[in-house]
Length: 252
Image (cartoon, rainbow, N blue to C red; front, top):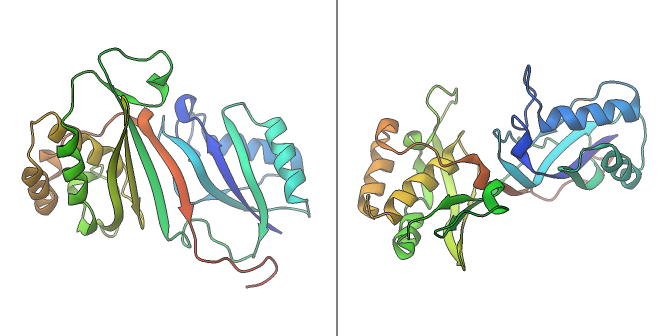
């Protein structure tokens, strides 16, 4: 049976989602719990990777269970074994053909900025602290530049292997909640560090160091060296991964 899980985690203590030598990762922690549960190695397939320090409210991962296991009991058993900063929110049986990465149609991210003079003893794990006032209307205008289908070559990590740097963004907007600035972006898929680099560029607009038209020109020219470095990972959350209607378990 194939199981689809929705997972929430605080990425502060981890070297990202994906397995890597010498690093404590979210995937490794969950696979270790599955190994204990089933008595045999189990490999997870996720909707995508998150980097060190990045969080998730709705990461999706799937695996083939070595034997039948009630999904609700599976969720209960895994949460009893996992560390406090990883939680399986949902577990359900899906069709054997379900592919968590290839079948995803929309990925939703959120980035959080704490915009006030003093840092927070609590929010430092979950938001980028910027002490100076930011031009919020300018940042809202900058966010709209990214909507649509564009080549995001200037907003990726150099050296990463990808066939195309063209991505489509469906929604890109800022919201103010008191001292907290929330950026929400929805797209088909994202390049590595793309969202954090977009945020860093919009913060430069908010600092009045870049104009909105400058940002548009950076996007069109595709020169990574001209774009600011990525914003800190602590403020980034993978909020949700959306799929088309899934076939029932046992059906192709």
